[in-house]
Length: 424
Image 1 (spheres, rainbow, N blue to C red):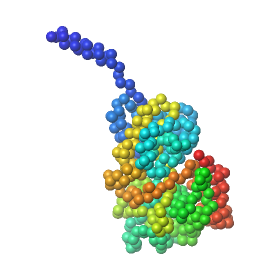
Image 2 (image 1 turned 180 degrees about the horizontal axis):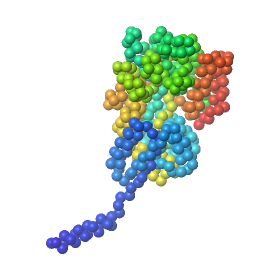
Image 3 (image 1 turned 60 degrees about the vertical axis):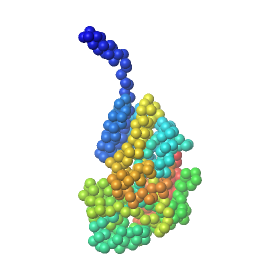
Image 4 (image 1 turned 135 degrees about the horizontal axis):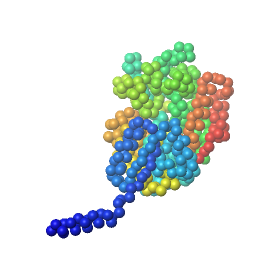
């Protein structure tokens, strides 16, 4: 019996030696450094590896200021730095245009398209093919942070129309020469100024994009909208240019955090800054409310960029495993978890409207009704557009002699963008 047992053990050991071990695939994953985002990815990676023991995720993060150059050097140079990259939507234009990315699996994209908000796929698509997966809906329009203490102290109700927004802003704004001691409405950061202008153009029934994708800001709606926005500072003095020029290193929400502003138009991401930097508490010190349309009763049209996304390089040898990881991250439950932990707006309508998500991110509720009104900004470098619009706005508000009229400024903007901004 003992001899038989010994023979059986020997046979079992021989069998184990003859069966090849399961091969492990290593997928390299690169993202930028952000404490909340990195912690979320680490948790999801652990879950993915537990469910897929044959795939190991090698996770590397880089400082944001270095990250775009790192991606460009890796992908455009033909090296395989990573198998999955986290990429800002605007950076995707060059990558897609130069053919360095894998096409996303068709069944994955088909399911995603039926559930995704329009802007989130904008820079990921070329000629009907898609080369990435969106992590968020980037929002720079639609919400107003209100200083609850100042409103209550002075007996104001929250505005529900744009006319009410401007009425309050004019009444409460206080200037001491060129210095604002109280801002009624802050709207003119590098992001908010352009996106408010574009939304106003659309809500007036106009457009800034022609059928061929080129930009034209010479229409009556474009000129009238810019004239109105210039008057908010030049004539109504509801704020000044400090938030746009950044002369004190402060943005509009900083002034609200210092109790020097009643209202700020801004995306919900600034709420974490108000909490972390200024110790403010939602529902106690501030509230986040819906931004009314610029024309009472108008359709709430607005535009958005493609935000943070994931992509897989064409020259990877691990494409199947890489896309398996990407698809895991985009599963509704995993995406909901990531968006909550990172204070992002989900790119998928089913997740943005999920009761559990809205309970965990109550600040999103005022924005949900307008998500399906969002249009894609356009296939061009948005940073160049923002810079030109901001420069034009400063010149018009300060009357520095650059332009004889707003119409002339809008024509010059159109010409400058045609000459200096590549369209993809």
